[in-house]
Image 1 (cartoon, rainbow, N blue to C red):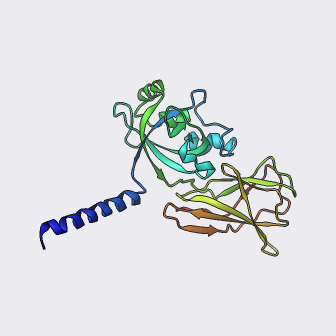
Image 2: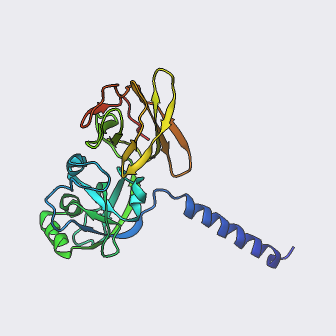
Image 3: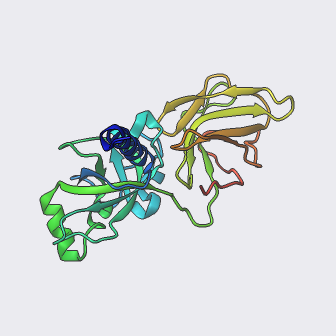
Length: 254
């Protein structure tokens, strides 16, 4: 057969392979812009939309950020991203790893960082001052695994909770690159489970919590559509109250 017969088929195959490569590249750097909280201190905010509270200001050593599209209606809370500014005169090759703790946007940015995180992209102290003066910079970013050394996933009972009529809690210290997309509470005696609502950010809530000690079930989802239920060994005790903090006894590293 002639080359004219095979050429369209070859071209179609190459385009199909290129499409697969483009959609499967989960570690590719994405171009965007970043700014910082102009009225913040070195750390983040304690009133972020994710519901982390004061913990969110110091999380990850203060390298935290608000996000626009990456907030994903709260699903993105706690996700970690490597962010590198692209101005070679001021920016380091490594950049900074930030954790999403808030929602916000401005100047067509994907990230509004704490000052600590924003200056962490710089090569030197002088370069950091120049970045702050610019205010908004071009960046490249990609999602990376979160890492919290020697810490399990932690449950903080929200201050709005009142036993036994209303239970809300926020999930801290989630490692890896997967999202928590659903949460259930199960009675440990009869194994009746209740699917919770995402109240806001990383806060899950129910107006009619199950009774007795409660077993927690979390659904972890990855970019490839794989879902895995994780059941921590430690239960939430029957006498839970607002402000309590519980170690789940488990960590998810992937």
